Image 1 (cartoon, helix red, strand yellow):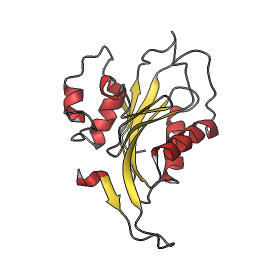
Image 2: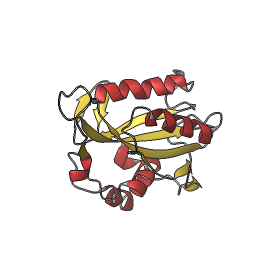
Image 3: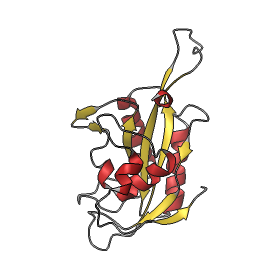
Image 4: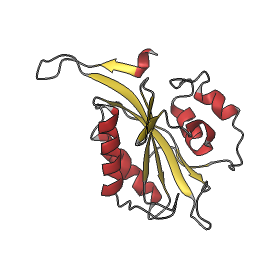
Length: 186
Protein backbone atom coordinates (compact mmCIF):
# COMPACT_ATOMS: atom_id res chain seq x y z
CA UNK A 1 0.00 0.00 0.00
CA UNK A 2 1.51 3.34 -0.96
CA UNK A 3 0.30 5.07 2.22
CA UNK A 4 2.22 2.61 4.39
CA UNK A 5 5.62 4.13 3.62
CA UNK A 6 6.34 7.79 3.17
CA UNK A 7 9.58 9.48 2.18
CA UNK A 8 10.60 12.84 3.52
CA UNK A 9 13.10 15.35 2.20
CA UNK A 10 16.79 14.85 2.81
CA UNK A 11 17.69 15.16 6.47
CA UNK A 12 20.07 17.98 7.45
CA UNK A 13 23.05 15.60 7.36
CA UNK A 14 22.44 14.97 3.66
CA UNK A 15 23.04 11.20 4.02
CA UNK A 16 19.88 10.32 2.14
CA UNK A 17 16.12 10.38 2.47
CA UNK A 18 14.50 9.41 5.74
CA UNK A 19 12.00 6.58 5.43
CA UNK A 20 8.97 6.83 7.68
CA UNK A 21 6.92 3.75 8.50
CA UNK A 22 3.25 3.99 9.41
CA UNK A 23 2.85 2.36 12.81
CA UNK A 24 -0.30 1.58 14.77
CA UNK A 25 -0.28 1.82 18.55
CA UNK A 26 -3.03 0.79 20.97
CA UNK A 27 -3.49 2.83 24.13
CA UNK A 28 -5.40 1.65 27.18
CA UNK A 29 -5.91 2.81 30.76
CA UNK A 30 -8.11 1.83 33.70
CA UNK A 31 -6.46 3.51 36.70
CA UNK A 32 -6.27 7.13 37.78
CA UNK A 33 -7.73 9.46 35.16
CA UNK A 34 -7.88 7.22 32.06
CA UNK A 35 -8.72 10.04 29.63
CA UNK A 36 -5.81 12.15 30.83
CA UNK A 37 -3.52 9.09 30.75
CA UNK A 38 -4.40 8.43 27.09
CA UNK A 39 -3.89 12.09 26.22
CA UNK A 40 -0.49 12.08 27.94
CA UNK A 41 0.60 8.94 26.10
CA UNK A 42 -0.57 10.41 22.78
CA UNK A 43 1.29 13.66 23.48
CA UNK A 44 4.50 11.73 24.18
CA UNK A 45 4.06 9.76 20.95
CA UNK A 46 3.75 13.09 19.10
CA UNK A 47 7.28 13.90 20.28
CA UNK A 48 8.71 10.91 18.36
CA UNK A 49 6.39 11.05 15.34
CA UNK A 50 6.83 12.83 12.04
CA UNK A 51 5.14 16.21 12.57
CA UNK A 52 1.55 16.20 11.35
CA UNK A 53 1.41 12.42 10.91
CA UNK A 54 -0.76 11.45 13.89
CA UNK A 55 -4.25 10.12 13.30
CA UNK A 56 -6.34 9.03 16.25
CA UNK A 57 -9.48 7.01 16.78
CA UNK A 58 -12.29 7.72 19.17
CA UNK A 59 -11.80 6.67 22.78
CA UNK A 60 -14.02 3.81 23.91
CA UNK A 61 -14.97 2.59 27.37
CA UNK A 62 -14.62 -1.17 27.45
CA UNK A 63 -15.15 -3.99 29.90
CA UNK A 64 -11.91 -5.63 31.06
CA UNK A 65 -10.92 -8.73 29.07
CA UNK A 66 -8.91 -11.44 30.82
CA UNK A 67 -8.34 -9.21 33.85
CA UNK A 68 -8.67 -9.97 37.56
CA UNK A 69 -12.21 -9.82 39.02
CA UNK A 70 -13.49 -6.34 39.90
CA UNK A 71 -11.05 -4.62 37.53
CA UNK A 72 -12.33 -1.19 36.50
CA UNK A 73 -13.46 -0.52 32.93
CA UNK A 74 -10.81 0.53 30.43
CA UNK A 75 -10.58 3.49 28.11
CA UNK A 76 -9.07 2.25 24.82
CA UNK A 77 -8.07 3.83 21.54
CA UNK A 78 -5.64 3.46 18.66
CA UNK A 79 -3.33 6.03 17.12
CA UNK A 80 -1.18 5.84 14.03
CA UNK A 81 2.01 7.81 13.47
CA UNK A 82 4.83 7.97 10.96
CA UNK A 83 8.05 6.86 12.65
CA UNK A 84 11.60 7.16 11.26
CA UNK A 85 13.54 4.66 13.39
CA UNK A 86 13.15 0.89 13.68
CA UNK A 87 10.75 -1.32 15.62
CA UNK A 88 13.18 -1.88 18.49
CA UNK A 89 13.53 1.87 18.97
CA UNK A 90 9.75 2.23 18.93
CA UNK A 91 9.42 -0.56 21.51
CA UNK A 92 11.95 1.20 23.75
CA UNK A 93 10.03 4.46 23.33
CA UNK A 94 6.63 2.92 24.14
CA UNK A 95 8.04 1.18 27.22
CA UNK A 96 9.60 4.47 28.32
CA UNK A 97 6.24 6.23 27.93
CA UNK A 98 4.62 3.57 30.14
CA UNK A 99 7.26 4.12 32.83
CA UNK A 100 7.03 7.93 32.58
CA UNK A 101 3.28 7.76 33.11
CA UNK A 102 3.60 5.56 36.19
CA UNK A 103 3.06 2.02 34.96
CA UNK A 104 4.65 -0.48 37.30
CA UNK A 105 5.12 -4.19 36.80
CA UNK A 106 2.28 -6.10 38.45
CA UNK A 107 2.62 -9.69 39.65
CA UNK A 108 -0.83 -10.55 38.29
CA UNK A 109 -1.37 -10.91 34.53
CA UNK A 110 -3.58 -8.21 32.99
CA UNK A 111 -3.78 -6.32 36.27
CA UNK A 112 -5.30 -2.82 36.19
CA UNK A 113 -2.83 -0.24 34.88
CA UNK A 114 -2.32 3.47 34.49
CA UNK A 115 -1.32 3.04 30.85
CA UNK A 116 -0.75 0.35 28.28
CA UNK A 117 1.04 1.26 25.04
CA UNK A 118 1.16 -1.64 22.56
CA UNK A 119 2.60 -1.62 19.06
CA UNK A 120 0.02 -3.16 16.72
CA UNK A 121 1.86 -3.00 13.39
CA UNK A 122 4.98 -1.42 11.92
CA UNK A 123 4.60 -0.81 8.19
CA UNK A 124 4.83 -4.11 6.34
CA UNK A 125 7.12 -5.79 8.87
CA UNK A 126 6.47 -9.21 10.36
CA UNK A 127 8.50 -9.94 13.50
CA UNK A 128 8.31 -12.94 15.81
CA UNK A 129 10.70 -12.57 18.74
CA UNK A 130 10.20 -13.05 22.46
CA UNK A 131 10.23 -9.29 23.13
CA UNK A 132 8.23 -8.21 20.06
CA UNK A 133 5.68 -9.87 17.78
CA UNK A 134 4.29 -7.86 14.87
CA UNK A 135 1.59 -7.55 13.82
CA UNK A 136 0.28 -7.89 17.37
CA UNK A 137 -0.80 -11.54 17.70
CA UNK A 138 -4.19 -10.86 19.37
CA UNK A 139 -5.14 -7.74 17.42
CA UNK A 140 -7.80 -9.39 15.26
CA UNK A 141 -9.54 -11.12 18.18
CA UNK A 142 -10.12 -8.05 20.36
CA UNK A 143 -13.03 -5.68 19.78
CA UNK A 144 -11.39 -3.03 21.98
CA UNK A 145 -8.54 -2.85 19.44
CA UNK A 146 -10.39 -3.62 16.20
CA UNK A 147 -13.11 -1.00 16.66
CA UNK A 148 -10.83 2.00 17.16
CA UNK A 149 -8.44 0.73 14.48
CA UNK A 150 -11.38 0.39 12.07
CA UNK A 151 -12.24 4.03 12.83
CA UNK A 152 -8.96 5.19 11.32
CA UNK A 153 -7.82 2.36 8.99
CA UNK A 154 -10.79 0.19 7.97
CA UNK A 155 -9.19 -0.99 4.71
CA UNK A 156 -5.82 -1.85 6.24
CA UNK A 157 -4.70 -5.41 5.56
CA UNK A 158 -1.95 -6.39 7.96
CA UNK A 159 1.21 -8.12 6.74
CA UNK A 160 0.59 -11.86 6.42
CA UNK A 161 -3.20 -11.39 6.46
CA UNK A 162 -5.83 -11.55 3.72
CA UNK A 163 -8.66 -9.66 5.39
CA UNK A 164 -9.13 -5.95 6.13
CA UNK A 165 -9.52 -4.59 9.64
CA UNK A 166 -13.18 -3.76 8.88
CA UNK A 167 -13.80 -7.36 7.78
CA UNK A 168 -12.14 -8.72 10.93
CA UNK A 169 -14.40 -6.49 13.02
CA UNK A 170 -17.51 -7.45 11.04
CA UNK A 171 -16.83 -11.18 11.55
CA UNK A 172 -15.50 -10.98 15.11
CA UNK A 173 -16.72 -13.81 17.31
CA UNK A 174 -16.29 -12.31 20.75
CA UNK A 175 -18.12 -12.21 24.04
CA UNK A 176 -17.01 -8.60 24.55
CA UNK A 177 -19.99 -6.30 25.02
CA UNK A 178 -20.44 -3.35 22.64
CA UNK A 179 -18.03 -0.50 23.19
CA UNK A 180 -19.19 2.88 24.46
CA UNK A 181 -17.72 6.06 22.94
CA UNK A 182 -16.19 8.27 25.61
CA UNK A 183 -14.57 10.92 23.40
CA UNK A 184 -14.60 11.46 19.66
CA UNK A 185 -12.29 14.47 19.66
CA UNK A 186 -9.63 14.36 22.32
